[in-house]
Image (cartoon, rainbow, N blue to C red; front, side, top):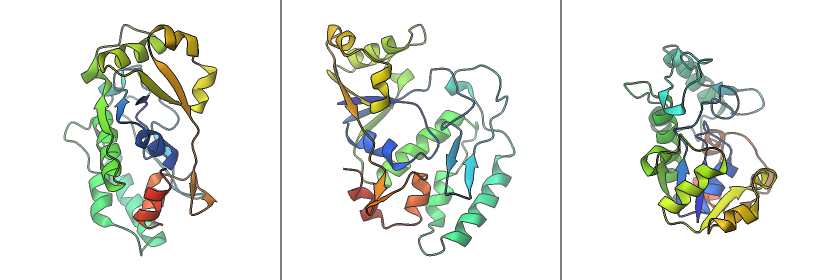
Length: 216
């Protein structure tokens, strides 16, 4: 089973539930950068939101071309202090520093990609995670043609998409390309309660074993 997803910034648990359902997850790095939404912003809780400062944010570029701005370090230090005050028991300073360590080239995508892999490792998700540009160049393709090309290159006959994709994709079109289209409905509950906060919030508020159980 394969999923292909956008590089979201410390997203909610549903993102990792989707990855956990697959044996391979491909993260797009060679599609257009979205300057708003989950790619650059996440909700730690009802009072704290976290965003990434992007250099030349409004310039139309591919995701891998984007850089994180120089204001980043100061903002992260403020965030670290705020989270430590709210979650002193479960706060893991080494993990926080690892997640927010900035690459020398300030690459936005490499920063996000590294975070996803660190969290998957923390949650014992064994899915193989790849960059789309390392699988095949799809910059000349549009919409679901990109998905078909990646699936065929990796020889994957089953593709898993979030339930929202039902409005976008035609199952018959996938079948004509030899791919079985499946849909996944997120289940953002932890210890029986709805929780759509950032995975960062969960890691610093719950036992890791409880988070891992909620991935199923």
